[in-house]
Amino acid sequence: MTSPWKLDPEAASSAFDLLKQSSCVLMPTHQNVDADSLSSVLALKLALAQVGIRGEVLITDGEVPHSLEFLPGIEDVLIYGIDELPAYDLLLLADHSDRTRGGDFYRDDPTRTNGDIPIINIDHHVTNDHFGTVNIVQGSAASTTEILTDVLAVWGTVLTRDIAQCLLAGIYGDTLGLRTESTTARTMRTSADLVDNGGNPVPIVNALFRLKPKSSVCLWRSALRGVSWTGDLIWTELTQKVFDDCGAQRSEAEGMVNFLVGTEGSRAAAILYASPNGWRVSMRSMTEDVDVAKISAQFGGGGHPRAAGLQIEGGEDAKQQFLEKVAEMIKADPEVAEPTYVSDVVLD
Image 1 (cartoon, rainbow, N blue to C red):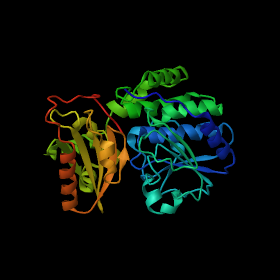
Image 2: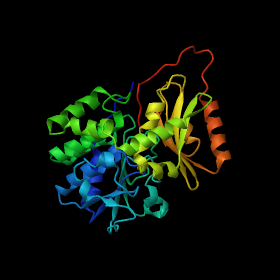
Image 3: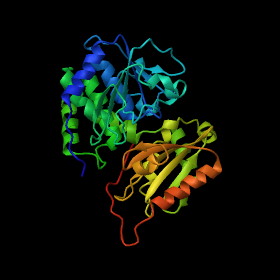
Image 4: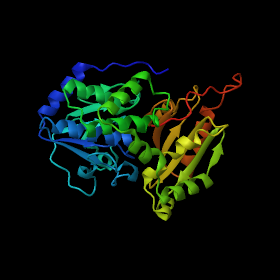
């Protein structure tokens, strides 16, 4: 059962005070941008515009995922590496589990998030280390947009149809349509309120869960052909060549690990994305006694108990050592006959 949470109105007010002093607030998405990350900053940009505050949304992956092109305000985003960065005096990091999650925006210059420029940190990851000048972190919330719905109420934001649509998309994205264990009665009430204010679940469900380009089918075919087991860990690997051959975006693989984790006999699932220096790993679990956030933390990563990520540096030996170590860590207790499943689906 997910613990109840309550917004700190003083933190929300302090964040608003900082925003009002800013000439331009930059809002980078986290790497491998998902619905919650992008919807959060798009909703914030629309909300800040109501009170004359300039906010700029920056996608740090170099491209807009096809599945998120339906979001209101998407035409105004900046793409890192393509568009020129504005002169900004405040950072708002929404849905970032730590200050390093900003993809190439961070990697090209780690000093960007070292605190010299104030940071507003709004997040729902349990591993968040409160790195901001102002921190609004609720690890029990289903999504960052669920938190933002309360934050915007403190700010007196008019909940327009477009803002409601963004906030609802973030909730649906991180709960797979209100189906994960993080979904609470509060989450459902918030979603209903957003629908009452013009949010429409139909285009969200279509874009995130139903419609897919042919390139995604090609990508999934390649990934499923490469599925392997190391102990009770089910995993597959995707290389840049596979993405190139299929003409697929990296975002098109993000739901695959949720599919794998439902395989009978698995206690955790992982997708390994090859990179020049190693692999980016996305992990999931469904059993109560396998906490992938704790596992990922041992490799410098983090996330949620059921959904987490990390980076492996090195070659094939490092990859194999990682797989074997994780398999050892998730071994079942021999005295427990059957696993206890917490949910049928999970998402980062």
